Length: 256
Image (tube, rainbow, N blue to C red):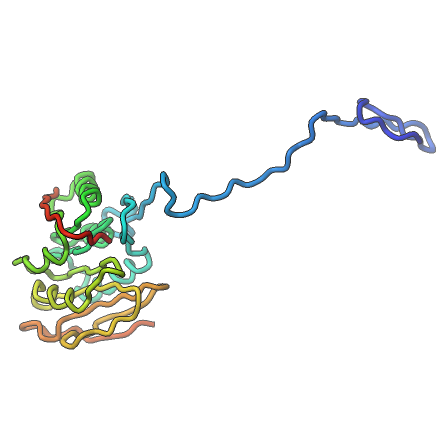
């Protein structure tokens, strides 16, 4: 049988009982192989970054993450664990509690507290873009039981005369002065108050603090602490795991 001519639309092939006709599809231009577009790396310019509130009345609300040095939102898994701890320790009753999100950044911790029913949350954030983002989110949510202070975290905690039931301490890991922070923050706690701390490595806790809870998620070590000498407060038994206002302070950056 002569070879088939790809330029023709049909060809004949010999068989024992006659001729079989077969249609041949012919393309003058060969198909190009498909190639997948490379994924844009995390952190690329132009890519939007957002985290979400994972519990409470504002659940699934997205929080923008600006491109700022040291800004590192607390992961979902860590926040879920933390607020499970707090729900157990405070018997799921947050209505009268005041919280301070000292290195607010995206506000993931403080917004989670508001969503789950905390009575009031104060956000402290130095970066003007992050502070403006916090104001915008609170306005969008209609949350009037919150305040945003554009201040340096160390300056704020040194000078505040307010007191809180829970203080979130999640500083940029490479800038944190943990011993100083714990000392200053403990003075701003109400009786029975708790400090939440995140670190990039295991912390050697200074004396004077009771370890209430601790866990680890990847490279993040996180702790719930209580000053052992809190007036009139008995430390919680320790276990180990298996509408917004604004004020300004132009000190060194401390965004989370």
